[in-house]
Image 1 (tube, helix red, strand yellow):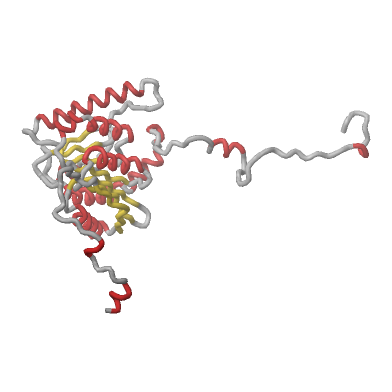
Image 2 (cartoon, rainbow, N blue to C red):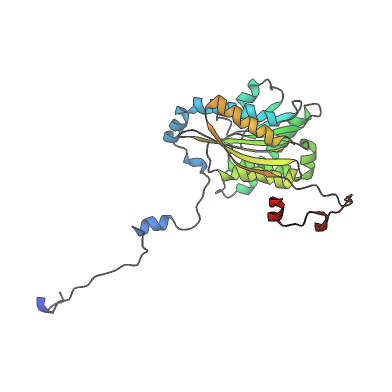
Length: 299
């Protein structure tokens, strides 16, 4: 009430604040504004998440071993080399151990992720460049000591971070590195327990489009599902029997693990264009039966 007024002269008011239907509080709305980072932060590890991973580590390891062992059927030549890009040196690399157990001690090289890369730091670009030189030197030393063999397969461990994918693609985007380190039919394989990490599939697809390019190049994403877990296998390979091998691969993994497979897609390379090719004969519409489909059916 105003000073000197009576209750009969008072007025009541209702204050209405602006908002949006379906938003309970402006604080919640504020947190959802702007772009969202879909890649987990390096510092987001917690004892709770580590405990969940450790609880199912044995089962996960066995499944990853089965997927990798069967995927090696797409690597056509046993004489060449393989590199496995893992997480940090202190972290377990589930994709590395199965390859060693297959008798490939001298043909497999573990490449650890650089520990001090943080895209929010001021010197991020310099750290990325330093890591690139370090990884390239490690790969070159591995290839140089192998009597002329090259890298037949590149495997991404589930703990390999996004930045290592950037570095690896930059290395192999350079023609000299590609010529020195890779044969024409290098396979790239990724096994992950996070179906939503689309950057892995996107990276492998860029390998198909920008490095292998022409047929018989194939890329596929395959899911292996249980009641509560999904494993994703992304693979690119220059293998003429790719589709047949994928059918055998999925069948074998289902038998070994009890998981249910789902082939999400199979993409191919570009057709090889031969500008000087001449057709032996041209066929025209008049060369075919021109009667109506009904007449053909009735006859």
